[in-house]
Amino acid sequence: MGSVFVVGIGPGDRQGFTAQAMAALERAEVLCGYTGYVELAAPLYPEKEVYATPMKQEIARCRWALETAQGGRTVAMLCSGDAGIYGMASPLLEVAPQFPGVEIEVVPGVTAALSGGAVLGAPLGHDFCVISLSDLLTPWEQIARRLTCAAQGDFSICLYNPASQKRKDHLRRACDILLAYREKDTVCGWVRSIGRAGQTRRLLTLEELRESAVDMFTTVFVGASTTRKIGQWMVTPRGYRRG
Ligand code: SAH
Image (cartoon, rainbow, N blue to C red; front, side, top):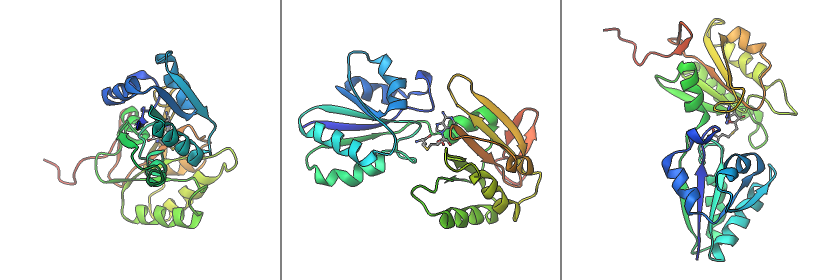
């Protein structure tokens, strides 16, 4: 019986791989995952067999990995960032009971909230939450409710999937919800293509964020009421008391 590693490979290039992720990829005989991520890692391991599939075939990909492992092979399933955050770890673990005996290891990676946060400075220095604006698997009403709660709770908010090819106005709609509870000049930022060629970043106000055209390769940060712009950095202080 073989095993499946579900591996977060970080935001982009090899520098973002953890040593644990590299060790898992080295041990694997077969690399599989969404074409874009497999293409990032496969050139580093030219001797490995590669099975790349397009987006939106998650369950089929999990079954393929588990079946291949049942056949005695070691498979690494690649995800960008962290495997457990809007990644393949949950669908794999949900399907896995149908493939008894296959060993599974979840290998964490650097998620976009962390790699993008570092590009902007320290936007997540105090309590924060992560919300995906994708309504592919979540009804918009639930996303809107979570945005409202996060705004009321004065969390720093990190937004994943701020736009999709089909829906361009999710960020604008999210900002409208946040603006009901947060100041217009709340410090915000976004980072596009973190750790990849053409990485770009911008600091802006919540009002300006509402007018921003961002794409699906962007991670957005909305500050808490305490978040400040210090020079080029977005900084959420760790506490409310000043020493
Ligand atoms: N598992 C991934 C998240 C997948 S959801 C992780 O932990 O990072 C896809 C969303 O993640 C994108 O829409 C974007 O908001 C964010 N994202 C992932 N990689 C990114 C990168 N290199 N640059 C900017 N945003 C990224």
